[in-house]
Length: 283
Image 1: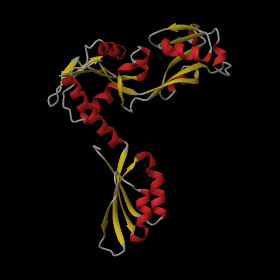
Image 2: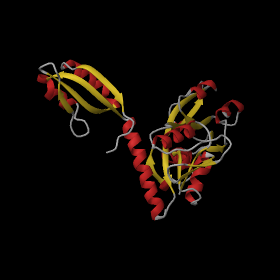
Image 3: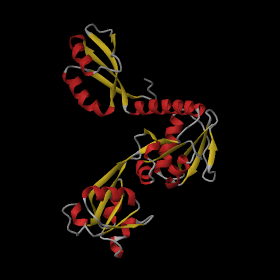
Image 4: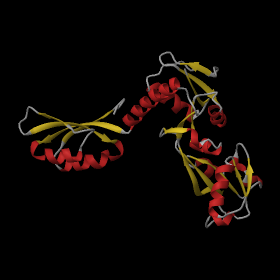
């Protein structure tokens, strides 16, 4: 049985559990249980503090973990990463009080900076040739400038609303992060096989999330142009319609390209364009 460690609460926890369920793995979660076992896949889920997950996986207490790259790199466990998962995206940024003068990172030379990520920040500043005094605190980093602890902070940013609410402005992004799947070194062959099965399912779910199934009607005269826009996974499916001179075309498109392609399809005479979600996409 594989043991996977996930954050016990918060958005990363919710997204991790959602992904596991979308992989067809059934389990009953509870707010008071710190571990649960899946009913249809050899997987046990451990609910831990996010900062503890890299250590548990490194030591082999858990076989796998889902954790933010920011936490993983700060813990020095980058070698454990096996798969980027595409959710819980955020950035680690420097911020200063709104009224403070700031032209470049060189302005932080000799200043006090509060952060929960001294390793990431220290590496960044060293690369910029800047020496500053880092104050490591575990939470409420944004309050540091207003109480005189620091002239700047370095913290995780998603929307930026927390910075604004505390009178700060973001000035530099030093690291971009997303959720990643990590694995313990030297898994047994049996556990490695289970990990491969789990990654196969996760990849199928992620491919589906990035893709849309598209169905449309098009004049036969425009078919070559339609096929050029919709290559599909291998090639589009084309079916004659009852109305002579028209065909139905079915294909798969990447979601981030859809609106551009839809405009071009309409321009060459395509009609009745339908877009459908894909639950899973294997291969």
